[in-house]
Amino acid sequence: MAEKEMSREDALSRLDHKHACHILLYADSKAKLFGKIPIKHIVLMQMRFDGLLGFPGGLVDPSVESLEAGLSRELQEELGAAVPVTSDDYVYSHLSSSPPRLVLHFYSKKLKEAELLELERAAVATAVDHGFEVLGLTRVPLYTLRNGGGLPWFLSHSFISNSRAQLLDELRRLDLVSPQNLEKAVKKADELRHTVKSDPH
Ligand SMILES: O=c1[nH]cnc2c1ncn2[C@@H]1O[C@H](COP(=O)(O)OP(=O)(O)O)[C@@H](O)[C@H]1O
Image (cartoon, rainbow, N blue to C red; front, side, top):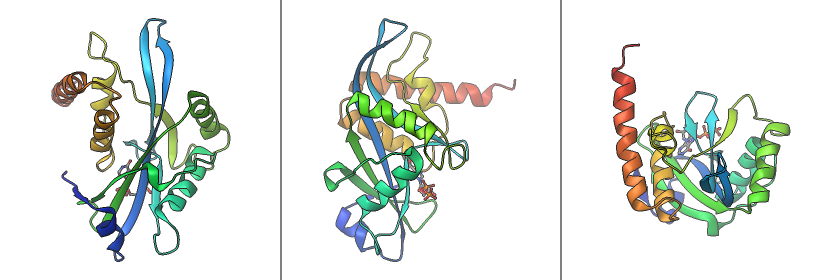
């Protein structure tokens, strides 16, 4: 569903709307899958309570806290560790079409690989939301295997709100996947979604 991009100023003037902030956390990595396929970057998403994929974050109330303070609070609950977010990490805002009267603010932040690994551990060990609102953090595979495994299959899953578009925009903007590989992965994902839906078994 289409979401309308808006300026931060316009977004914050919507006092009669709810506001939600979400973040893409990522790190560079030299690790290799099966010892040969470079991971290149670790990008985090999460499996939500409703079975949809989305980013860490949640509802914030700009009348009582800054967007960044609200997002940091949500991250503490979902990841079990402090992730200081600043306005430098802000990417863009969208007016949600469904549900209506909701403004979505999106952030991304690069971490060191060791910091990200520590967050993954804390998300299981100490996060109060683990097993409830959040069923688990997941990494986004950025490679495409010969059989379509990796990013295409990941993109063929179901995502909350505009989080799939937020993911694709950031992978493109941060150059975490080349434009050609991203385009191919999206095309393959669309074919896979069609195959899964039309398979009667
Ligand atoms: O990753 C995301 N990207 C964009 N919008 C999202 C994402 N996750 C949830 N949303 C939207 O934001 C709303 C509030 O988010 P969330 O469910 O994370 O907050 P909460 O845990 O505070 O209730 C959801 O109803 C959904 O429409």
